Image (cartoon, rainbow, N blue to C red; front, side, top):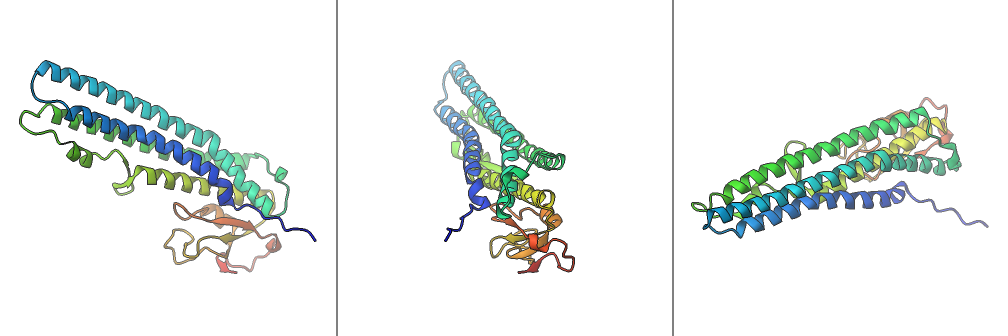
Length: 279
């Protein structure tokens, strides 16, 4: 009697990538929040008095903050480049390998064909642009904060310096997303990395089902309440059959999506099935 092989889920395969990338992106953003706290502390310690001495202390604090902005830019950009160029192709391949494993096929069937390269290049370019746009927005907000903080520090003769008000008005520990909504930077980093990883991996899985297995149908495993196109879509995703083309169009529904695609080799050639049919 043989012991059944217990395959790792796609999510388990991606966990190390997601954990590492999230930590790196969060660490980059903490450079901003640390710099903001340091600047506010330095400016709050300045008392009205010697004008020349005050100016020198303000210049010193400004220089330290600007250096921190440059460090943030370098760290965050390095993350975006590594994520797009190195990590996402590996994640795409993990998705393809998982599809082959679930079909009891050798991982060696996967090769970086033109179609696979085109798919991962498109995903990487999209996600690189998204992350770099957040970086540029964060830098813009940080510079606006610096201007406001310096103006407040130079006006302490008439108005007390209010560090907490500046922090509330310029929360650099948040990311602006969508309709100018502020999200905690740590939560955004985890959600963005997870969504991009799952989407990329499932794209690799669906493409491998079509190209390496010749499979037209996949079985979807997902959260019981997750919709197909979005979390609130009434068309539920879990335990449904979908065409590979539908799976390529909707590899995930939302951040933290648990979607996984399984091959249905037994349905090759079947044309009477409706995409979205319940199992």
